[in-house]
Image (cartoon, rainbow, N blue to C red; front, side):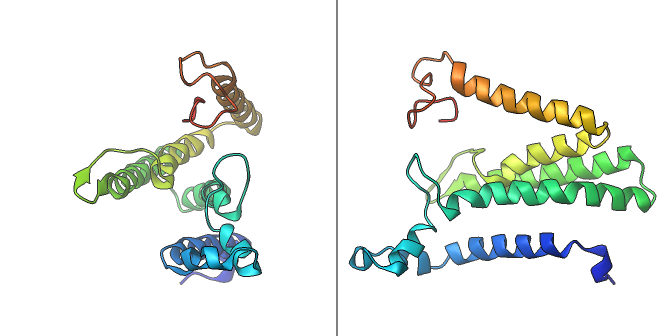
Length: 183
């Protein structure tokens, strides 16, 4: 049986809060809160926080995916340490992470690809993206903190460079919606 000593309660609370947001999104509540008849009310203002901002703004709903990435990233060192303490070597930890990543990828692609009347393969949801980032992060746990820091900054610089200096026609405008590298 798990005890509270085995858990980081703040992370569990944050994970629960994020899951609550996702579950609540499946209800009609947030759609009703932004009904045009409620324009200018506190209910409408709160309701808009549960819809993505069209382009150059930030709302609570825009943070749900980063929340998930953060939660997974914070949990990885605890998970790896627990498995190592339980007798696994790093190759076993990495194998477990690879299997988990494959499952996340399968679930992510399956959930995003099956739509009404058609099947299209997409890689644009948090589960599919977590499948890749999770495996990379677990792999990096093998290296020193300074190596992890260097790789992190290199990835940030790579991402910035792709947005800023992309020369693919039609995707070379980093600050224009649907015309940048991430589009």
